[in-house]
Amino acid sequence: MHYNKVEICGVNTSKLKTLSDEEKKELLDKSKKGDAKAREALIDGNLRLVLSIIQRFTGRRENMDDLFQVGCIGLIKAIDNFNTELDVKFSTYAVPMIIGEVRRYLRDNNSIRISRSVRDLAYRALQVREKLTRDLSSEPTVEMIAKELGEKKEDVVEALEAIIEPVSLYEPVYNDSGDAVYIMDQLKDASSDDELWIEDIALKEAMKKLSERERKIIDMRFYAGKTQSEIAEEIGISQAQVSRLEKGALERIRKQI
Image (cartoon, rainbow, N blue to C red):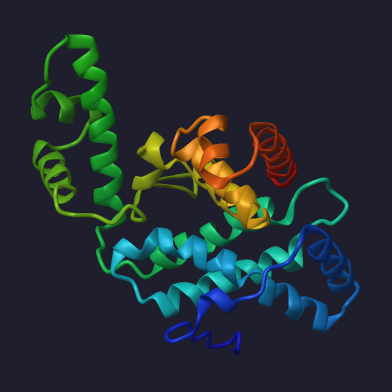
């Protein structure tokens, strides 16, 4: 597998390597000292993480090979910039870095374009409309919005109509002193919050390090909603053993997360 042109089609992803926290720390220390083989081992050992992240973007009809390559760029940046002296897990640092790289790629390769001046005017018009709606307790007219903005009515209408068309979430909608605001920055979906999603990835990675019996107990206990007695009867051990295995598994998961 080459990092200048990563190919994932036809690759059995289940055979990708995974590294323990201890292995990651050792390889990161070596990589910081210029060990090229350690750096390569870190990349290989975290490709599964890249795959987990780009799966979030599968509904965008993007080429998965391209997204994987971009994700790997983010992974490499994370490896090269990670501060081993901080008490932070590498995955906690790498996940936002990889997501950011993919977002930049999607934003920069977006085919839909609206002029910056029109976007700026539309964004300001929406803000004024919201303000006037609060002040007047009713929907303001376009004339009122235009007057508040000091703009021509026709220009305001054109700007508002322009953003009715489908626009990428990664499209800049406003630019103030060089700081771009993207459409996605104005939206929030509690069900797919980045922090919750990152925690979900961390939980899944921690679950993989449990034994088969421990995973089964956690699945039955917290996902299937079964009692310890029901689990004990089903897998043929005592309730005390189920309780002990469950407690140990949860403790290891907490340490991983």
